[in-house]
Figure 1 (cartoon, one colour):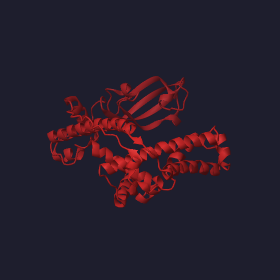
Figure 2 (cartoon, one colour):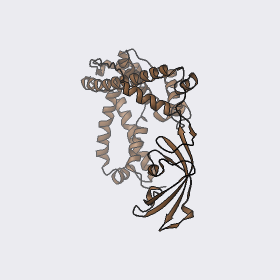
Figure 3 (tube, one colour):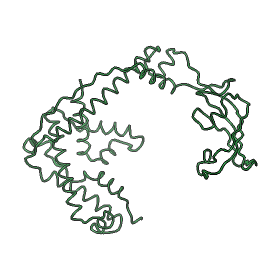
Figure 4 (cartoon, helix red, strand yellow):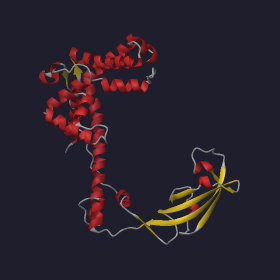
Length: 339
């Protein structure tokens, strides 16, 4: 096993294991107002956004282009087309068969696009003194080659009829071009307004947290966070085959005493944040049951692209308390940004 573990791994381990301390039951069982006095949350200034014609046109074109299928044409290459080619490479005037590229596709933006513009299927083109690294990235930038390009086929994107079949493919439920544009305009409007509202919420949330005051902190809460962070370093030290103290001094470039002072500060900050989140949720009447939390974990698993196979894996990875706090924060955000 490798003895050296990077600082990145240390940080990741601390983040992942920071919730390993003993769960504090007070979030559900105690009156949190004896620990924190909440400030008043300033309502956000909502944005009413109307997309411009240019925005709608650009998004419409992009959405349509994503569903276009190129078809072979007898016409000349140019614009938004695809040319399938065989490229023969010449070094110092001599052909090098081992460097031949079969079925090479040239599209708009490719450095060879200008050389074949106006050419049709069956035509040839030449490119002289080309930097070899453009075709073979690992090559020396200064090495030059000549190319002979044989065009096998040219394909172009044809704008289809905006019938119900195509429109519903671009956006399910749309039947006509006008409905499609209306849907896309609505998507732009929603995205812009949600982005603005979310930014406004987090600005106000930052001010809100700064205005909250604390009379005391439950020892069991912040010491649990501290123990979770300390456990992460102890686990890393064990995997590296050294003592906790030696690990901290060798790989973290600090002393145990200084590291633990930092961890205490982080644990206190984390405890304050947690109290604000749970107290705010209680004040707003927001609750999360075990069933709610499991459903939330299922959604995370489903959208994780295979990183998590089940809700149980999500809960095990994050920890039930940490996941619940994250979900509450999501619900608080929705509560204060909805109409």
